[in-house]
Length: 257
Figure (cartoon, rainbow, N blue to C red):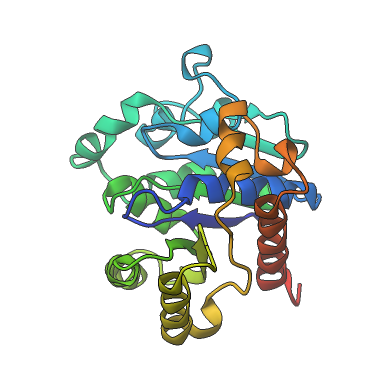
């Protein structure tokens, strides 16, 4: 059965999609079978993996709406062991459409039940909002990773997300756990970066990944080439950091099995 991990933070620009892509590629490089699901209407995860949105019919929209099977909306990527269920502009209307639907919180969970055995990890790239798409992801997920940029308002937003996770655990998914908080776009030259890291580690303790992801131009360039950083510049500091994060994830999720 797949370990389903949601990447969520209602604040945009924290490296959430970049993290989902690169952790997916790093897990695939470690011989794990990976499915990346793009739940953000902007569709950046698909673009970052080299897919042109108009060139394919597959998307997560029909799967969540119940009009299509998950297995029929999965594409093979150029990364061995890694597949993707891309986004669609139609997802932007899903928040409103889900309001009147039965079982609206569990639609993604139920759809993924049919394919979960085919993967070791299913990664859910959530939109930067705490609406029904993110709720579906948190209800389907076994755990959550919170990408966090080291800036002044970071902890304020994370505390809001923590409260949401607590509500999801109480009402819909008691098995959901926080796999880790991941510090992204890290720059040791700035005192603020180190101060935020100290506060995050003080607040969340061992739930913060030991690895931090540095601000790295090669990671920023990779999506424009339709590749994860690992396949764009293997030796870049960003690609190597994501490989270490993937190792931590494997240790956290597979230890004792």
